[in-house]
Image 1 (tube, rainbow, N blue to C red):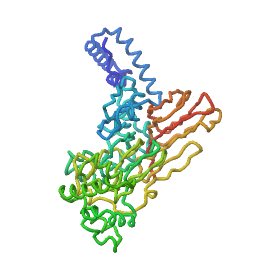
Image 2 (cartoon, rainbow, N blue to C red):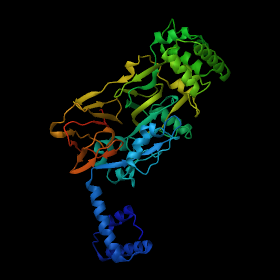
Image 3 (cartoon, rainbow, N blue to C red):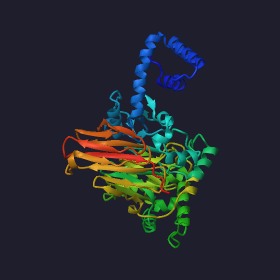
Image 4 (cartoon, rainbow, N blue to C red):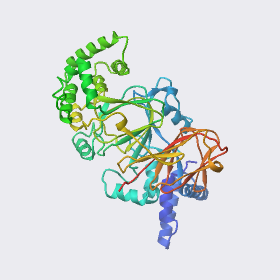
Length: 480
């Protein structure tokens, strides 16, 4: 027997289950008869099915924490096969998912973005579930702030998009537009800029050495590189007075000149520096990176950006925040990333994709800071939790970290509620752990992802006092 569509049945039940007069009762019977004819069942069998469906609906409405099945993006820069955390996490969620050694698994998307939406128990779209009662599920304040006061999100959308990244090859030199520019780009060029929302983002490393380019270097480092690498200076057409007037205006002239150079000059200067470095027996890490990037993206002007942008090494648990217009490129490692619900990117180097050099050079923030100044510090909640709270309302991320040397009181840890719907991913877990929420128990396994309704407390329980857990929880955090 074909199973009835749960959503259709629930809608009919909501409308017709309690008829107040004979005409409504007659209408109800017509609907039931029509459905039975469509699914080729008799009415008595249908009544039995309805009892089961009612039980399922009641159970779903009682649960306040739901396991998600999330989508994977197989971009070329991702790590291959079982070397990818993304692939391993996906297979943990869905054992039927097949990992192929030759394929790249770059991103795991956790959220409601239409390009790769998550599902509850691999059946119902998370966005559809949120639509059923957004005030209760996301919270009144979130609904008012993001749906009532903003036209960038539709009912059912989460204001944030949560991801896991597994990177084996450099991502593009890029930046994300602010809200005004994002709307303008989407209006003028929807093919290349499909979102009208801005895309501030934060990344927390889950590997021991995550590498990224982020923001412009301090001025003295840039001037040193212009002198030490004449090929760079040629591409920049000199220092544009940067050595005498150390300001953002002159840095913009240098960077714009380099990014707009002709392909022939870029190729010529790149090969000159490449030949010089390959003949050296005492190359620096930065020079080795230059050669690596050339192997990945031959004759790309973006290879020279490493001399102007900070090279950041992040240890496990360290974070960076990228507000609008900050130039950056992730190079290598695994990380958990959270951003506003958008897929808007302006690219200009280290990519075969569409490049918009003029827009990027014009929009960038040319402030010059050190690597450490670009990192985001967290706020300790207790011995086991740290909150990372960037300045935007769309997201904050809570890190839950328990080492084997630490002891839980009575084998239990209370994870406080937050005033929004949230998504939690487990990236590492020992045996014997459970989450408890609203009287229900949930497995804690590496790669498992859960959606938790607004204002719902979670308790972690352990069969032993000593345990290991690394988990990340994204939630909305209205700052004002």
